[in-house]
Image (cartoon, rainbow, N blue to C red; front, side, top):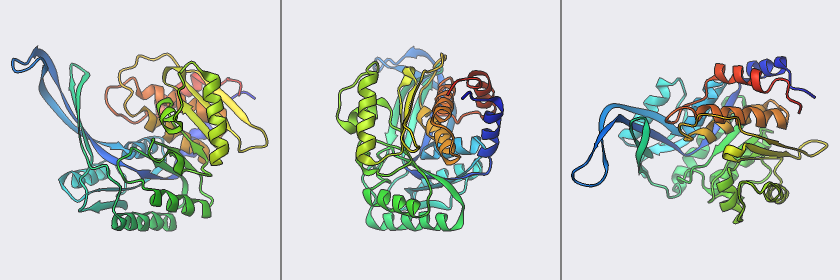
Length: 341
């Protein structure tokens, strides 16, 4: 069956107003932009003359930005520090029109901040300020209460679990959220990291990149070894009872395998040629598009095709930026409409 223009336009229309819970590690992406025209006399390093500073939402909060950019309603659940950066984070949420009702402020933690120094439109250095130990039991309890409150208050259509290994997603938090989602029949989409890779069972979509697949499964597999990647996906899906698994493969595109229907569906979607400026945040965009597609029960082929396209689009910009909905729609109509699923 071919993907029609009408099908794509209807899908984008259906994104609007869909409530999406995003649970995971949040942070501030702090940028210092400037020009480099000399090397420091103190050490063989470039000197960046700063002309602009930006504080942007990062981590799982960038997923929330992508969800909002697509026309849906993000509800972000996470923990930040009860500090100056935590207050700045909440201000950034308000500025971008995102509710802070799911945010816990903890006196036991600092707000994760990634400082990126950009010189001559290229990233020169990144400095991270963070605490990545697991949440305390009291902070776990407060976050669980926030999540439960959101479930009871809003018509959540899908849950995104966005892991950056910064300590918010403890095993207890994961278990509780999967239990609450499952009892309500809400699909869960996961963007995993190594630490909790095996914590997710019976989820609707599991989306590692190749590096995360290698680390999570402790296997040696290369980008060009399609058969080994496929076999690893088959085995992990079976072990964890995962309905669909999508592996992002950088310049090789994405591979998706879905066993939720009456027949197994597998697709490898090649990447589109791009002028890549920065891959930061591409995974956030991919999971955002894929989650809305899964919530709307879109075919695996269209889900992977659209997510793949969106991830490539944001790589054309320096820095972490959400996808442009109009640009994505236009490219989908041009590049996906007419494809044979």
